[in-house]
Length: 140
Image 1 (cartoon, rainbow, N blue to C red):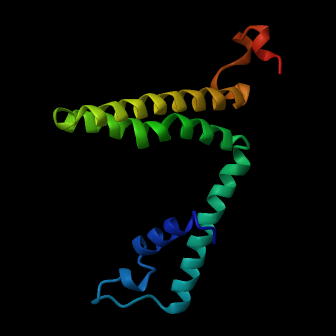
Image 2 (cartoon, rainbow, N blue to C red; image 1 turned 60 degrees about the vertical axis):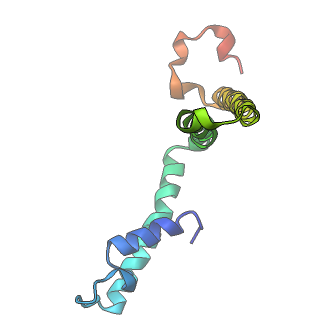
Image 3 (spheres, rainbow, N blue to C red; image 1 turned 120 degrees about the horizontal axis):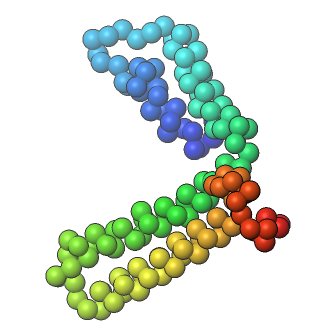
């Protein structure tokens, strides 16, 4: 089982009561064979679902790269620095404030460059209809 699907299957095992640790002590567990079959089905589903998405949407990696470049830096770097300024802005020394501003500017530049870079590599039909574009944008 791939590492990226293990947390999903473990969570589903616990939610569906297939894990022995998820059952209250008063309930009797399902027969081992049935529980094993259900756990195998959960694992098959958690591996087959991303594969199905990859088959249905062959350019899905580019869409995820676009969302990742647009959102990851915002969520992981820009927003925490902004919240830090908002919550502790009056207690921050000037050196730390300058470092935070430098990190903030650098993160905004990285997010902008990454978003523009991935936007340029996206398939043309995903975000807009190509009939309305000037001819210079349609040349590849």
